[in-house]
Amino acid sequence: MSTNTTPTAAPTRTINVRLPLEIYDQLEELARATARTKTFVTLEALTSYLASQRWQVQDIEAGLAEADRGEFATEAEVAAVFARYGA
Image (cartoon, rainbow, N blue to C red; front, side, top):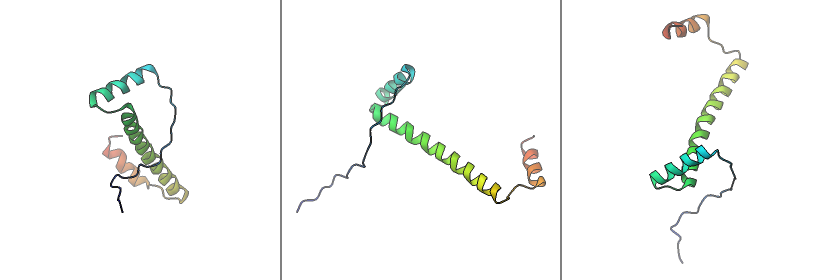
């Protein structure tokens, strides 16, 4: 009985993206400078962007849910925030 010690790669999909030449050149330069492939750099950038956007969307959705439940800041709470930031 043999065992495979190589982890199975996750399923993938291929997409085609047209990039402005300036972005492509930056991608190629970063890949070369870091000894990575353009695919690796692109995947890292996309992963980071999606995580950032997911956090923002989740925060907005949570705020909307609070508003739907009628959970609003009191006038005193709003005044305290404005005072803290000099508004």
